[in-house]
Length: 143
Image (cartoon, rainbow, N blue to C red; front, top):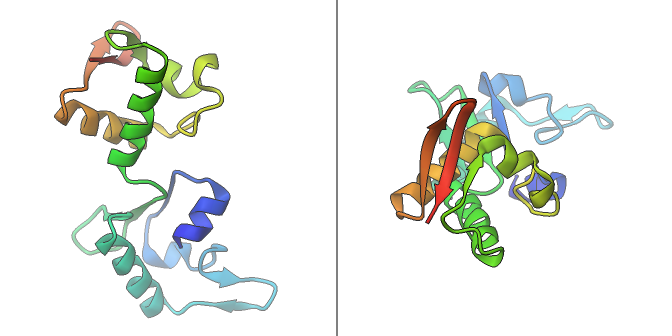
C-alpha cells in the first residue's frame, strides 16, 4: 500500500467505508476483473495502522485515512524548508505554505489542509511553530 501511495505521491487516501475503497486500484485490478475481499482489506488497513500510516476516523473502523507520510514526517519536511530558507520568525497563511510559489518544488506543495494542519500541530507540540488565526483564515508562525 505504501509503495502504491509513494508511486502516486499521494498525501492521503481515505474512505467513507472500507467497502468504498474496494474498487480502487489499491485493492482491485480491473483489467483482470479481480478485487481483494473486504476481510483482506481490513487486514491490510490494520497493518497500516500499526505502522502509523493509517488512522481510523470512527470507532467502528469503517472510515479511515491512509497517509503516505505521517504528520510528523510532513512537519519535519516543512520545518527543514523553513530552516533552509532562513524563515524562522516568519508568518505564512496555510495557502501560501502549500500553494505559494516559494514552495512549488517542495514535497509538501499541494498537501491537503487536513494533513497540513496535523503536520503543523506536530511542529507546535515541538515548539517549532504556532498555528494562528489571521483575518483571512489560519496561518502559522515558525520559531
